[in-house]
Structure formats: structure tokens, C-alpha cells
Length: 125
Image 1 (tube, rainbow, N blue to C red):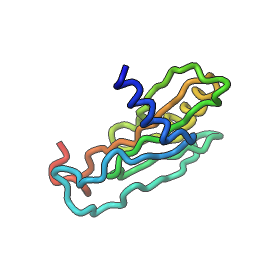
Image 2: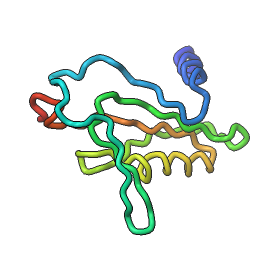
Image 3: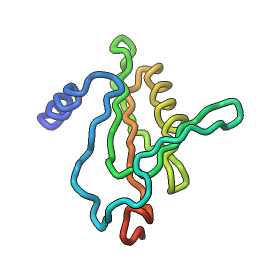
């Protein structure tokens, strides 16, 4: 019970919807000075839709999407956007999903995670 209370207090510090919090700020193990662009967002047209993809993530974060308190169910999920192990499909596989879950009263946390990249990692295996 004590752990639950501590976790809820931690989350309540970030109770504003869509707040991005850093997960940690130390250097990436086995990394080098980036030789390619980092944290670059590109917008692409896919049919009638525009999607955002993120490339070169070196600072992982968690973006919090909280539902309207009147709709909140007490449920929560962590969303890890896909992208074929090279990019993160942040809009349609991340933020759009989080917003849709919020409409159903579900809290969502979108994880911006790092992927191995030759311009950042010494050995990307």
C-alpha cells in the first residue's frame, strides 16, 4: 500500500495532461558524439493523413496523457510506438492512440525510447 501511495504522489506531480518527463539524463552507454541529427521529427503524407515520425532519439521520455477526471476509470497503459526498429511512429502509433484512450477514461503514457543507430552508438548491436 505504501508503494502505491508513493507512486500516486509521484504521478500527481505531473498531473497536467500531455506533460513530457525525462526518464534519465546520463550519457548513453557505449555512445559517441552524434554524427547524425538527433530527436528529429518529420511529417509525412500517407494517403490523406499526415503522420509524424521521430528519428535519432537519445533522450528517452514519457509523455503523460490523463483523461478528464469525470471519465477516469483508474486504468492506465504504456504505449510504445512502433517504427520498424529505426524510427518511432509518434503520431498515429503514439499520441493519437493516447488521446483515443483518454476519451474512454484511460490514462496513457507514451514512451519515447532510444533505438540503436550507427551515428550515435559505437557498436549498435
